[in-house]
Amino acid sequence: MVQGEVETRSYTAPYNARLKVVEGDTVTRGQVLTEGSIDPKELLKVTDMTAVQEYLLHEVQKKVYRMQGVEIGDKHVEVMVRQMLRKVRVADAGDTDVLPGTLLDVHQFTEANKKKVLFEGKRPATGRPVLLGITKASLETDSFLSAASFQETTRVLTDAAIKGKRDELLGLKENVIIGKLVPAGTGMPNYRKVKPVSQVQPSDDMVPVE
Image (cartoon, rainbow, N blue to C red; front, side, top):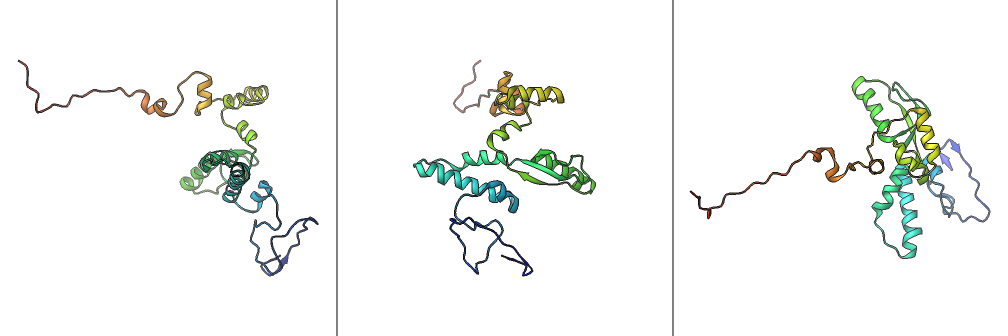
């Protein structure tokens, strides 16, 4: 493999592996060289988040459901894949308040950079997306009530107590646990104080009563 006509790299394939490329082919970053499954974490190292999301969706749909004749909408798998890739590990904090090596939600990472770069013109933080297993992703949620109701209850609650965590009750699960209205539909704050008002539209056939 030639990179920029300067560097040559050699990759060793297993003896019984079937190659998907031949001599002279142009190979792009992240392209599969042999038949078989790909390690999604290795794919994430050499490509981007979109490529990993597409690969996971394709593997689950084609090799799990459709092989058994089951038709399921892509959106259901996409929700799980999104949860598995919602964390970023900070590599360089830049001028932000985040700490290197910490695991942040994508929206938290974006907000930290937006505040420093757009409003203060400083150096943004850099990081790499992290692929978590679906179990690990469930335990890495911001809500310790939601995580404790899933698995490792003792560890999650002990960690929350030691760190003095505060649950903002932003999700559905944690609100159900403590018996509050879920923040969805008519349970949203914008709709809780709405009162129905009945209005009678006057009709031309109506006769005033004296």
